[in-house]
Length: 251
View 1 (tube, rainbow, N blue to C red):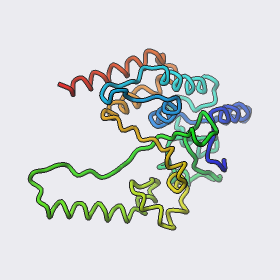
View 2: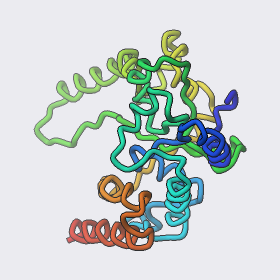
View 3: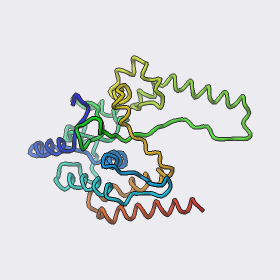
View 4: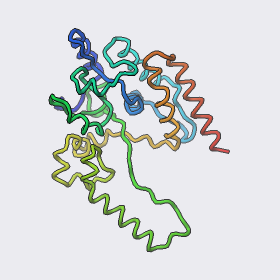
């Protein structure tokens, strides 16, 4: 793990070896970041033209099939289980939910660490990990005068320069100013920003209608992985639901 890469093949081998001890390899938790990390590794995009979604495709099918295969092998947590409590109890090896879980992980009675999302390849140049930017936004307003605008910008800049508390909450703040702070450099998630290769691997899906995609993945992802619906049916439904909302917004 010194290279911060764990591949799906390695996870599968670990799960098969740990089965006899009643230990699972992987938690099935928040599907969205796990699916999108793998989807991007397969070359998947959320849109081709910037407007219409592209969810029902070969890349999405392969991504869900891989997770479904792991579930069918019996090396993941099951539907409805408290997956992170199982991790804390030492019953699961990998819990790829997100760096924000680290404060809860501190309750564990064993040594643990943070690494990237599971990868298809051990080649760092091909690495992709889902990411999201919690950046500040200032809306356009005819009623806001220059003084208020200046005050808002100064406040945002102050927060960006004083983000250590934000980082202590388990996040990587939306400002690279944080990498200059010694306290941050000691945090387990810091390698994602301190290492240029890692930083480049962080994938932000900037699709205009990403929120609609997120809603569908959150609502249907587990059902696909746990076999409550087929991959084809699930993706077709998600594609239609997102497209319908996009079409409504176009009007």
